[in-house]
Image (tube, rainbow over all chains, first blue to last red; front, side, top):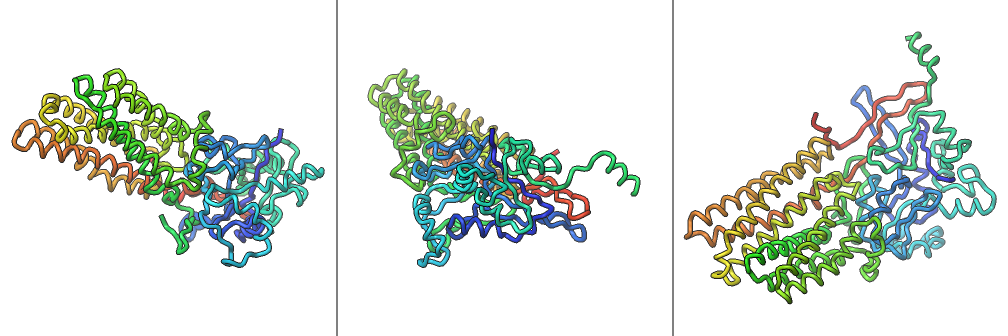
Length: 230
Length: 309
C-alpha cells in the first residue's frame, strides 16, 4: 500500500516562502492563488512570544470532505491518497471550498498572468494546464505528474528530486518532506516515528496527510535526567 | 465579496477565520427560495385537508423553488456543465437536492393539476425531502463552523415551514378571502406552531455554537442578529396573530404584517448564516515547536471564542 504524505518540521522552517514561489513557478498559478503557502503564527504575549512558520496547502486527507460533497465526482482520491480534480467535470460550484477546513481551494474566473498580458516562460509552458482551470476549483496536485514520472522510471518520490514535488525540492532548510507513510522504512515514516507530530484540525475527522513535527521524542531516561538537572 | 479591479476573487491570507467568499447572495438564494417554496407546499397540503384549493399557490411554490435553482445556476463557474451536478448521489447532498428537484416539480405540477389531498401529501413529502437536503448541504460543509453543526438542519427546516405558512397567510387575505376566512384559524395555528418551533431551533442552534466554540466574528454576527430574529421576527408576529384574533377591526393588517415578518425573518436568518456568519475554520497549531535546544510551547487558535464551560 502507498499513501503519499507531507511532513513539515516546524523546528526547521524559517518562513522564507521559497516553497510557495517554487509551487507558483512549477504550476504557473494565477496571482493571488497559492497552492502552497507558509503561515506566520505568533503565540503568546511579550516577553514570552514564540513565532512559528507553518507550511500548508491541500492536506490530501484520507477522509476528504471536499470529495464527499463534490456533486460531480470531479474531486477524486487516487489509490495512493492524492486528491485530484478533474477540471473537465467540475462545474465550479465551490461546495468543495466551503467543505475544506484548510482553505486549500481556489477558483479563478479570469485567467491572469503574473505580469498582465506578457506571459512568463513557465506560464507559456503551462498554458494547456491552465486554461481548463478557468472558473473551476483548483488546488495542490501533490505534483502527481512528477511522482508518476518518477515511479515509471524507477525513482523514489521524496528521495529523488525528479520524482518529488517542487515545494519539497525547493525547501532551503530541509523542513518540508514527502514520502510513503505506509512504508515503515520510508523517510517520512522514520521522521514521524522519531519525532512528536500533530495533524491540523484533526478533531474534524478528515485524517489529513500533512504531519507537523514540533519536538523530537524524548525517552524516559532522558526526561528523568533533565528533571534531575533542574 | 471582496473583488479586485478586474473582478477576480481575492483570497485573503490570514491566520484568522475569514468570511467565505465562494457562496454569495446567489448561493443564499437557493436556500431562501427553495425553503420558502417547499414550506409553502407543506402549508397548502395542510390546508387541503380542510377543503382549500391550492392550485395557484402550488404553482407559486414551484416558481419559488425554480428561482432558487436558477440562483445556483447563476452562481456556478461553468453553467453549461450544470447537469454534471447529478453525478455523485452516493455521497453529495447537492446531487441529492438536484435529483429530488425533478420529482418535486412533477409532484407539484400533479398536485396543481388534480387538486386532490393525496397528491398534495405526496408533493409535501418530496418537498420536505428537498428541504432536508438543503439542511444537509450546510452540515456537510466542514470548513464552516456556523454551518456544520447538526442543529442547522432543524433550523432550516423549521424556518422554511414558517416562510411557507407566512406566504400562505398573506395569500389567504387576497385569494378568495371570504372562503379562506372559514379556515383562517387553521392557518394561524399552523403559523403559530411553526414560529414557536423556529424560535426554539434558533435558540438551540445559537447555544450549540456558543457552547462548542466558534470563530469570534461568526458568533458576533449571529448574536447581533439574535435580537431582531427573536423579537421582531418571531415574538412580534405571534403577538400580531393574537391581535388579529382579538381585535377584528385590525385582523387583516395584523395578519398581513405577521405573515410578512414570518417569511422575511426566515430570509434574513439565512442571509446572516450564509453570508455574515460563514467564517471558515482558520488555522491552528496545538503546540509551538522547540527551537534548537529549547522546549516546545503552547499552540494557538487565533480568532476563536473558547467553548463555554
